[in-house]
Length: 114
Image 1 (tube, rainbow, N blue to C red):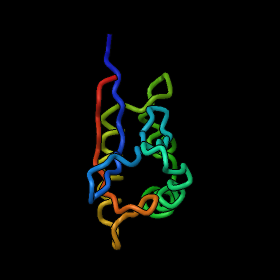
Image 2 (cartoon, rainbow, N blue to C red):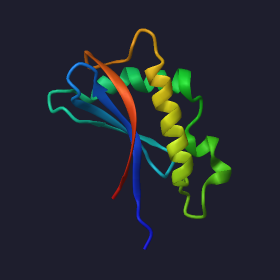
Image 3 (cartoon, rainbow, N blue to C red):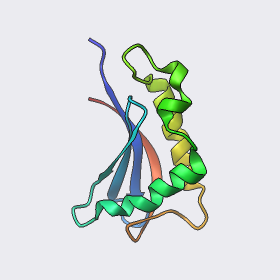
Image 4 (tube, rainbow, N blue to C red):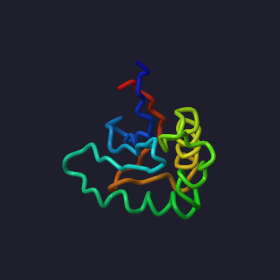
């Protein structure tokens, strides 16, 4: 049985190292946002979502990679990892540095077996 992977971009507080949020790159070609601090409101992702849609990628991943989707309408892990790396590089290159819910954060790609 093939193992499944969870691929995404973890937002980490630069000062404390705390995990603040996670942008999951779903095999369906959609991005899912997960907050990791209970006091953080999900609306903290609004600015990041807007940045990603306007300045990083102009169309959803399922459209950008439509030819690469398999018969089950899933994107391969390799493409998801490439896009996650591209997203993290974009977020880390922002000037001034990326802020999430009032915290200055850095982005790092995470790939884990589930």
